[in-house]
Length: 319
Image (cartoon, rainbow, N blue to C red; front, side, top):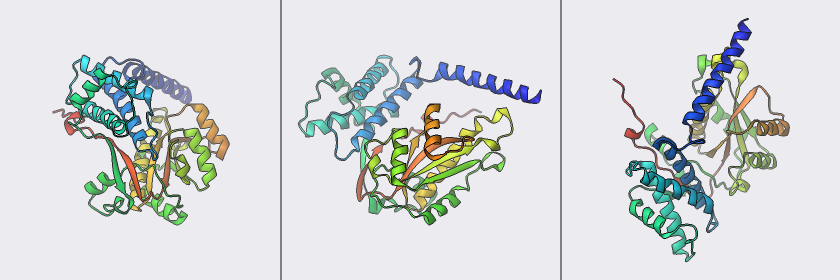
């Protein structure tokens, strides 16, 4: 009876989350500023990532740019706040895209029309957006600084120089990352170091989010959580909570040991989980949280400048 109640509880909890996700995610409607902002951020970050490519592929992301412009136009039409940090950042990212092509005398009038051009000009420059050039020799300067400086200095790096990180150093990283809290201290997180460049390349093909610079990656870390440590049906989501906490701690630990990294999204359909299981014999009881590309950065590289929300856009005070 206890097991049956657990199964029914798990089913109802999943149904509840399913309904809420359909109602409030932006995958099914854009009937609020929060949903539209989510679409805008998703699209502008995609353009930012295209702007860091070296060599640059001109006129890239035509469809993505056009969708982003439609969202920005809709934002203005609905009279949502034009002082919103993410709206302004998106306008600046598009402006960076436009300037890139103007400087290189490349016509993009079929991508951005005159009306859209005016919209971008009206709001760009009020918030930073686009890319930042970084020198590798300076990137880790704050690795031993106070936490506020250390945390602000860590950025996702996508351009690696091909040098492998030795296993001993990775061991130190994992030791430090293990300080991450977990539910009842069960420490269900697991790490797989993919130390074979060919195998790393195969996994990146499955993940599909680092196509332009995937050839510079020699090592990967797969972060997962073992479902076996959870004791009740109410804990099904704790897999993702504990895994996310550990992932952030891992990224900080890598930065502390002066290893560049980028966490790659693994919100994938189940059949891609099955592909990973088949490729490397991945344990079925573990849920992949993220794949992290690691290495040492090239001498000079660009990163997306993703503007963080202001405090008043994040914090709600309830007295």
